[in-house]
Figure 1 (cartoon, rainbow, N blue to C red):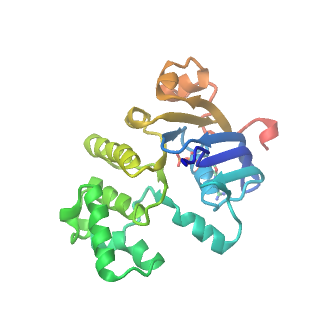
Figure 2 (cartoon, rainbow, N blue to C red):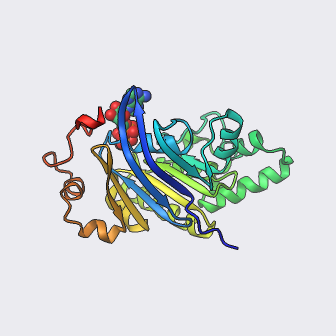
Length: 262
Ligand SMILES: Nc1ncnc2c1ncn2[C@@H]1O[C@H](COP(=O)(O)OP(=O)(O)OP(=O)(O)O)[C@@H](O)[C@H]1O
């Protein structure tokens, strides 16, 4: 039977950093199979939200369920959960003295006891999935920014996680490389049966491949809906964010300012 429960479920979440509430009253369901864009101005708390999904940040209030279970506290259980979450971080995180293939093979060598020929085969499959099989023996410095991002993506996919999290996947990429990466995010999501959460402020590159979008601002979710609904919204928060205007209901420094957020 197909599991129709949300792959991520947040209920009444409050997230604090340094004793200050960054996000409050967050409720969110991420349905399986979707690409969900998490948008918001710099400093609004997008990365903070992600850290609650991976168990790096324990909420001050509320519940977080990922992959059908409450995010655990224990180190061993957290490691098991994280094997089911592929994370592509902003800086790629590729090891410079390893080839593309060795970078992609790293999670397989660290977390499985698969024999070397099987690992080699899996690595080539992952590189093929991102269109870079021919670059297997190249070092990161020999790759363009877009290619390096795709190698990092192949590595995030190495353990076949059902949930992919992308934190600003387009940072530093030109428009063509950005298009290639976002197309890949969508295609891999659909062909591998994944769910993808894409945190970004690259709204116009991300919305075309997203099923749902949420906008975070002023310490909460100010919009949740489809990209078409987002574009059509006349909510002042949404309009200000989409137009990138400094004046409006979103505080310029994006720090929560209301008394209850203190
Ligand atoms: N370790 C920390 N201690 C204290 N405050 C923090 C910490 N990390 C982040 N913050 C604060 O939390 C707020 C949200 O930061 P966060 O990185 O989640 O925002 P973001 O939306 O991901 O921003 P960006 O788009 O710039 O990456 C910011 O005001 C930031 O200064």
